[in-house]
Image (cartoon, rainbow, N blue to C red; front, side):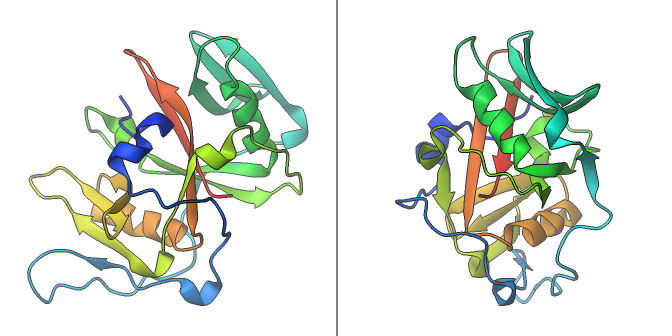
Length: 212
């Protein structure tokens, strides 16, 4: 079950900075990501601007449809599922997810191949190829927090618990492996603000990450 923290819990688990201003980081802000560990252990500089090879679902934003099934909103292009978000009927979750998907043409992932019991916790998603559309996402100002891309650290949590990428005490995402953490750092280094959509119930948790 994916353990990425829902929006309602962000204030408890993340250091949320006031406001949601900002935007993509300038290219020169891409940092060298260091890993924690014994004194003197420093990660090599990140190579490339984006994870490669990329694990992405491509779709046509003009063909997106929203449906509700099994307690979740599904945004799909025909048989291609673009995203899934848990929510009760009548909640804005589905509209939020649909607006987000319309902004792009690819929904990408890091860590979908992990074999942990709570595998969804260690899956990180991001979005590529802007469509040129910018529909408003309802409540977006409440779903986001800022961070400093130049301060990103990839840290081994120890005891086989995986890795996390953070800005000081602001934990942005947990990952299964060091390689996944480095790939996630490449994505995070492009931005200054991280946002979350979705929620969870006793059976499933669907939280989507994006960077406005």
